[in-house]
Image 1: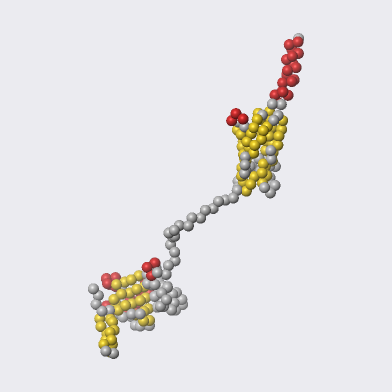
Image 2: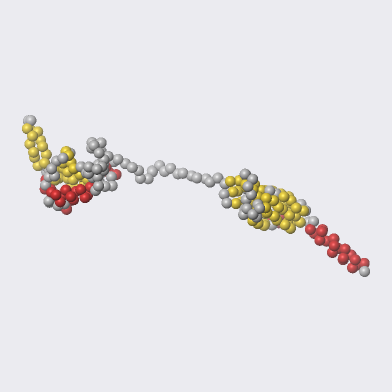
Length: 229
């Protein structure tokens, strides 16, 4: 009879004693402006390698129950937010509160300036992608007919800058008559669109150099045929 009484007494006293040896941790997660942060991730690390995780509710609150007594470290994170320092708390029996404030994560941007930069705009004739020089056997592909020859050259030069169309220069002079093909030594197309010697942008410009040259002999000009080697 006495033994049964002791067992019954222990049944009533033991649960309160056991429940007194656990703790509950709860709190609320906000940002620096005081706004709640629902959906934040909470990681709890405790004694003997204990690890637990939970997700913050829509009201910004979180809770861990039935925790062994001891020291804990709390980590928290959310998209674009972070915890500046892990929270530390020593849990005793019962419920304790630890509110968490997350800070806005600043994005780090790095710009690397290379010593050798990429392609740049250049006024050099060598960097003109549309430049073309025809000489020697290249001229054989052009038409012998002056009208067709002019049309071929204009097609190669492409559209000109401005409403007046492209310019044609014969031995450096504009407005001249197109010479026959057998008298042409070299043709340059869009060689240097930015050259200062011309009065407008050089796209569509055709420069023709003939085999003829003028030489001054004692005040008299003579026209001779240039020879190429």
